[in-house]
Length: 637
Image 1: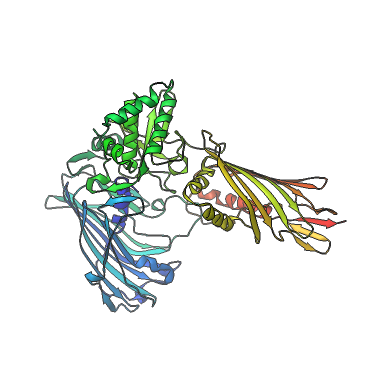
Image 2: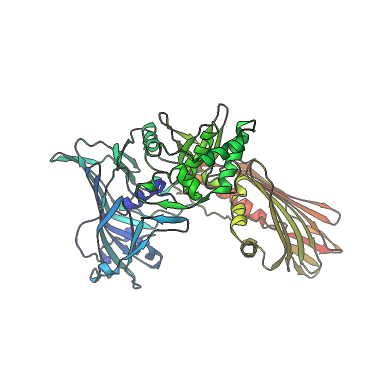
């Protein structure tokens, strides 16, 4: 992930990592109220995040927190992880381990802290490092205490305070204080926080304080909205900020975008040989879209994604000459390089900040800040905009897919940066159409020829796998995915169909052993061979989170069973049809001679729905779950 764009996340982790507390150094578990243990694996006893802004390039963070780990399920919360680099420095770390009675077992030694590079598989070089420590204790419950002091040499990062780390974490007390010079303007946004911060003044400074107590555990609800919208959370940042020699403002998205523009300005100069190549590729093409596609294909064939994150380079794109010479770059560098290629061809484009995390299809629109972890490119036109994912080597020009499609983004412009929404791939684009011809023999074995066409977001994962994995690995994963008790795969093929909205065709030959159960003269089997829905939701009359589905899709299955000689249907499942605000589902069976045809169609809509709609969702999925497992009974003549 690009460091530039992970800054918002890093700040979030930092701030959550900057929570602190003060108080008695002993924390007996017996002092925890029963209500704080209910549905919890971790109890945050005390926490305090202290942020002191001395000036625009000197910010001090102190995080002291105390957590009681109640059982093994909460053990992962005992690990302390802090990242640092040239823009943020860890000044000190201290820690203590207590037993259930609150007695000290061990104090942290600096030699116990692991200090490792944060280089990942896609990074060539990075100055980011991570300090890691964990008190390994297997006697539960126990308590850990850490204090981390850090210094930041910029005010670009915003602080996030989220006392509750997860649904199974309760909080006895947590406090955030932010101190800044009186003339220093702060901007903050609150979620589920009762009231306003307490503001005091002292010695030319203002101190803002937020505090919560006695937060109960939350339920792990299916299809929730972002966690920070479900628990008290606060985001704070300087309205005017600095990053090295660059100054910016988060007063509006327009202002924030201007800062990003300046950060990457003047980096589009191409070497002469690449300029010549651009004209060779585009001068004889007639349309704008043909030129975009030709240059995008050139980018895909001649560059690869490798991240180089050093200092401010984690937020600033390497110039076009660097990418042309090296043949690689991160999302910022590749997007800037594509912008440079288009510019040479006389086509203007804009860099775009976006969040590609699977569950981050919204942003805090009223809080301009780095809430992004990725950069793409858009090519505006009078009637339409072409969006380009410049790190992909497999997608056609104009397709973003599930990674960056259907979410808000910041389009960077010198004067008019603004939020926009990337293309939404609806139900008609996200298809899975499956046709199966299956022969059932008299012993219950089934041989099936399966042909499936995936389009849009439904093909994204398969497409990625087929380009990244060997055939042996693909077959290994396929064996894990098929919901059949005993079977062999006799054939496996796939191909890309070259459509504007990407689509793939997959062919599988399957021999399922004893798929049907034979008892006396009767045979029992499920007509839904491969598309049984595994979702069975529990009733919940106290649902708190809205229900969110990020994308819409349509699945259509047609299975033709050739029945064994001498058998005919004795009992068939009744047709099922259900329709509502979440989608539609139908299933029916037709018999023609010795051929039994099962036809299933499921459509699920996208969107956010109020918690009061959850009972209807339970009914929707329960109906599908039961129907998908309805059996056919054949009887021998």
